[in-house]
Length: 113
Length: 112
Image 1 (tube, one colour):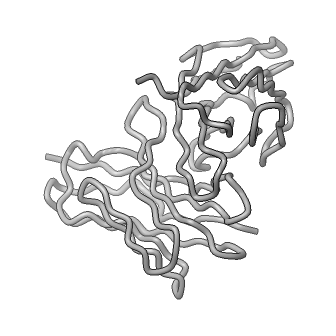
Image 2 (image 1 turned 90 degrees about the vertical axis):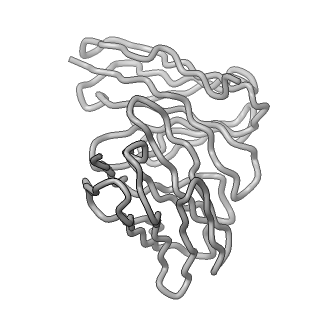
Image 3 (image 1 turned 30 degrees about the vertical axis):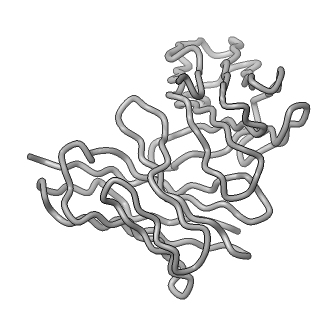
């Protein structure tokens, strides 16, 4: 009954370090998403993958890269972390049909000093 | 552009009080509308949804009606409980996309 699993749950980085956030889902969903959540701003889409082998930019893609490794896994990479990337990051997945709800992981809380 | 606007929080209520959280949207076309809830330390969970005008979504005592004429999807509950304390997000998705557009969230605090 795992759903969407994100690792790690917490991480502290220094400015300029790199890091990959991992996400895996076991619901056989085609579509996966990465969001960041900042106080007072709701969730903003960073990147999404409508299906295996495709990725597209969302609202705030700068400073991030993604890899859709296979149908289950969708990773988010920060190549050179900046303090402005301090946030809570959520991965989500859904069926690739309109009007379908998204299923979220528990988030990764990332602090960049 | 497409957007969702929610009332600012926090909303503080006593147990058994009536809850309304306002949500309005701007969208081209005919969006589907959702309410998600986020409990402390957790990810978002779908609370309810409505896919066309005049539909009413309901779940766990919460209700919201899709009002096309006022472009609104207000969340209501007749009697809140302490366990309803959470952050509530209104969101829309467009017919042509799987993506969600979220409001900024409204924090609800229910006191015993």
